[in-house]
Image (cartoon, rainbow, N blue to C red; front, side, top):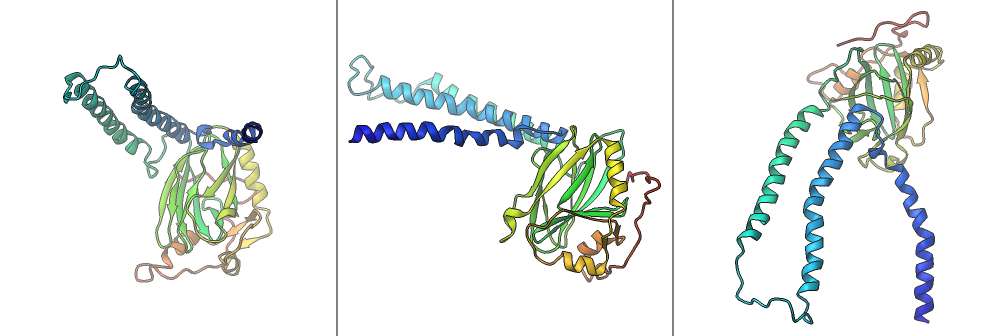
Length: 307
């Protein structure tokens, strides 16, 4: 009976294993599509390698010692009074000290080079995008073009993206794994993030900080496209019938889940600053939303701001 159960268990494991390993194709952090993501991938692999320098020898030596000094091995040296070995002490202390020193230098360098607030060096002017975490959806405002989108982020390939982030209420974490770092979005505060997409494609964005019942559906598509296609997308966006005026924003900020991607062709100037400032009445005036026309027109593309 036990033999049949054991055989059945092994067969079940063989059937389930391919399904379990199928998720390995979704390792987004190890399939970066931008320079920041690539640097972070290298950092993860380097840190993993350093850890394995300690973990693997420890595991191997544990097995070796357990086998060599087993009770039935009469050839093993029996030394009950042994208490010191200079070679062992040198190895035990030198390796950790070298690893810690190397990690200290590595952390110092990467903390500065991968600082999310640090603008990316490029000959192309950055695309400015203001991000507002709503419950439970993402609002993206393109201040230089007077348009906004919900749960859809379009960016040109090879162009640095300068994000400003805040939250309408609950704290969230803005994360596009294949492009790089995650940054928190908090009410009454403004954070920054600089990323770039080096390849065209659609990359999943999400909130990586639990924020309530709609958290699992708080995702969006990041569509990286060639610059000429992005310009065409802008022209189409300006034709959208929806306007993000006072009434539209009040409706949008109400909690909702599984919101379809939406484009707004007219956005109130200063909307993002107003959302940040609404919780700081003693420092900034209360949010005031008014109808406005797009900053740019469909007849021509205004130059992107370099500020």
